[in-house]
Length: 311
Image (tube, one colour):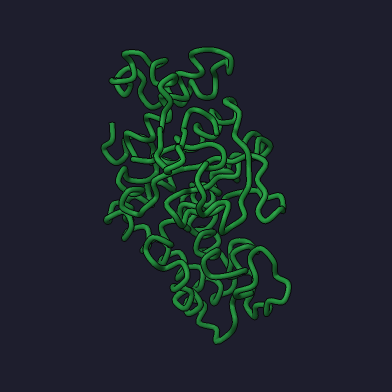
């Protein structure tokens, strides 16, 4: 466990180490004034990983996320038994400080798309980064669930540097799973999403799918009704795929184009119903702040730090 977030045997948490906090000096108490959002973000990407300034940038980024969104950052496996190592068989290693800076940069870029209370109100309290992730002994990339208050990101240096949009997708995808779970819908909202297809058919691979399709009944739906093949595995993944697409402006614009230009009326209707259902979820979970005007602004790349009045 990296000392920037330590857990004791009773599960208590020391979110930011004394060493890191002291490196902030007097700035730590008022860093929002001395180190506004863009300066912290730029520092994560530009600093020399061997410098004291680099450690300061990491500490300030962790503090920024905690102070503004009530979310704690962790790297590596927890020291206490729980969801990760007992139920899901998730194993992984700490991130290096350089990898952590890149991961924090991505989180800071994407977290500002949500109202400050979104995470607390929807039961997501932690973000945990793991490297070299294995789930039940199999190499794993992407995210690993947020159903116990932790949004898990399986860090990949290759993806983070070469395809940052994929990493952004992971952040929003897993966050949606977490809020879906907290709302009690994750395992119980499948019928609503099956009905959106209005096809009298089996739209998903159903249970037994997702990680392995062996033995699962194949869907009877058109792949055109989904944004990628993963969404066709089961209803919770379909919802999370739609959620991540609407939270990334380029993908959101592509979705609107697909809805408006598809030559098949049935496909257009199904995609529109799913789009409306996802926006309804976000409106509910954000207390109405992620409304029609919000989506117009996000599609136009106008949602950033300060959008919700958090200056």
